Length: 367
Image 1: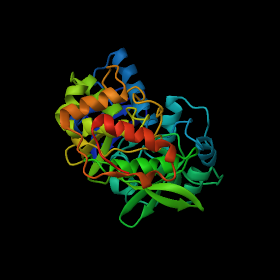
Image 2: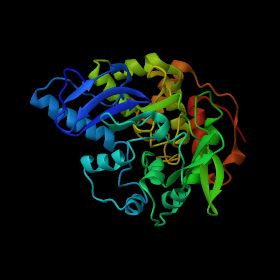
Image 3: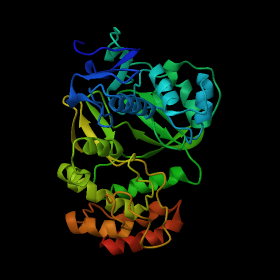
């Protein structure tokens, strides 16, 4: 720590067992490995007042992003079970995340007190126990008295629908609930998307507590993480890179195919937290866009051929139809099997519009 004086309680930002940076609560920091920093955390070692304030703000914002937000269904029940406040600032949410060392199932970053003798193997969520009691709180809003340790596994799962991680042999799977046919819509959209050559999470039908849920395997491991496009944008801004050029240079095929399938299934929830990059944890570098996920808001804005505004157009104003047509012009439709009408038996109201959208893009459907 030579050259850096920490004036208050300090933390080490960890990438597995590597110290990426250290920061205290007054904003003084030291960066040990810039290439192993979180994509969405920017710190400066300068000691001027502005830098110190920005460091503190950025650090607590990053920590806060590793805890659930209060628009999440059952979030209040989850926080009540922890005995924590419901109305929270970024600093308060950061405090919640810090109780379980900001550990997450999306990546291998975590936080420990400066000089603390704790290792990644002691805290990571891939190897340590997951208390299945927490699934009842996450999916049904039931009240239990639980410990921070068993609750932390779900706090870093973003979104507004009830969801919970379940440990199974070989890893985790995500169970998702929701009203307004959200499960059926996600299952149908997943089935349709499999007819196209794009990397994607596969959603299957399952049951929890006697009710239907969608089930998917976790896409992260100790070897591979994901970073949201929001995090990638922060990274690009702080490294003077154009985010569109960055994405297209990394994985133009999956970027354009995302716009194709989102149009076809009417996915209106492709905000910048719902797509991003797959990261190799050995060097913290992106490999490609991560698998497409989160389809429980499919078949929205599905009453016209245009669809909703495209959320992935990098600031351009395009409809989903325009973005999909542009994508087909860039990489083709890449349909690998035909879509069957019988798949729409639970949601027949969407079939006619789906056929019309397929015709717009030149695809094939079984009658």
